[in-house]
Image (cartoon, rainbow, N blue to C red; front, side):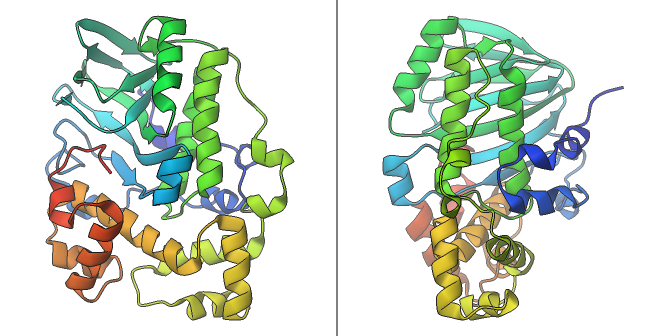
Length: 335
């Protein structure tokens, strides 16, 4: 019986997740949120070969994050058939896969290698690359970037001599990628520092060959973690209501605080001002809809909480660097 990524996700223990907000996420039933957008047997409108149950998510890092930290731009979990085939000349990210089931053929330059169940793949997408599934395959993936990630990637490649490897650290890589998927799936965001640490930890894990169990944030001040129930509740409220016209005052009222006091606490613990966090959630969801559906941009703007498509387009373009239409037609990993 083939493995399902939903089953894997449901087995992740709340004790292994660093943020209390994820504990609430674990209690939710995992269901595909966008079944209404299925096209035949394909889940993703712009990627042939992806099957029902597949999904992908996006994150829009700030300028400061791009300059100083490691960051995720997109992640997902895919069920694929023999039609799944990707060829790209250039994407401005690096790509980590974990193969849950099946086989994935990967070509980088003049080298081709087949990744199988339990293996990790690490690709430099700046270079021409190609990958395709051999029959039905299930995998989780994440596009990552950062200021010195090229040097770390080169070091990993020198160490292993290949883009695909199977080692004792693969389960740790799988867990970290699943944690990103979990947060995104529930319309939440990790704090930038936590996300950066997790990405750095994955790369260090590959370099050392030893699972990096202790989080930097475990030994740091609680103000750098989403452990406060107020912030957790606020993020869940935003995730449930971003489609509506909500304000920071509404969020503060929901958690029983004044707007000013709530804003200080939220900023201190999450790294985002509440209004900026709300915008990020809306834009991440908009990216998802642009890539996975054929919905008109006007409808998408309304779906993510903008009543005016002009305001939506301006906010999207200013933060993403592409208009919604340009993003829809861009390579998957970009921005």
